[in-house]
Structures are given as C-alpha cells and as structure tokens.
Length: 118
Image (cartoon, rainbow, N blue to C red):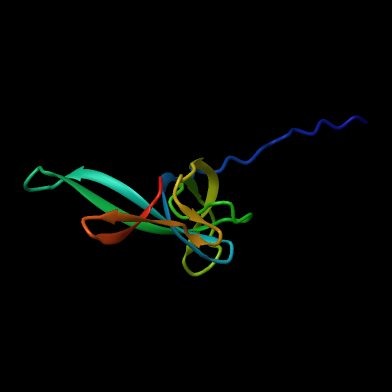
C-alpha cells in the first residue's frame, strides 16, 4: 500500500518589486522608501518625474537613510505597510554616522561654512 504523494506547490501571483531610496528609518522595523517614476506628460510630452512613498517592513533594521533598496509587495502588515524589504542594493556613503552628522568647518571668504566631508 504505497501511496504516491504529489508535491503540489501552489503558485503565487507575481509580486510587484520596486527600487527606491530610503528617506526615513525612524520607526521600529519600518522604512519609508521613495520610488522615482519617469514618464512623458500626456499632453506636452515632456518627461516628468513622479515620486511615490511606500512604507516597507525592515525586520533586521538594516536599511539606513539614503540607501537604495529593493522592496516587494506583500500582504498588509499594518494600515499603511504593504511592502517588505528584499535587499539593500547600494549603501549610502554619507557623512552621517550613528552619533549624528560629522561636519567640517571650512573658511571661505571670511566666514565659516559647515559642510559634509565626503
């Protein structure tokens, strides 16, 4: 009495994926990602840049502000979160550290200017 069990894997629908820039990570396990979309204006045909904000779940809190990330659509995790972080595509090389903004004072034309050292 050997029964043959068929491994039937239920197919999921295609999940949408977007690549965007993290603009905030101040919430616990949540990031806000700004996705850029370029399209021609319907009437004037000039290329216009449109932006959308998505709230995404970041389980390990690995994404930082300025990073380029890939997010994937998922089931609703809260009222506004329907996306999940897949990977960090590119790290932001910025002067911000965990302790705040590191600045340099540069003497230009008789006044001091604070600027980010890159």
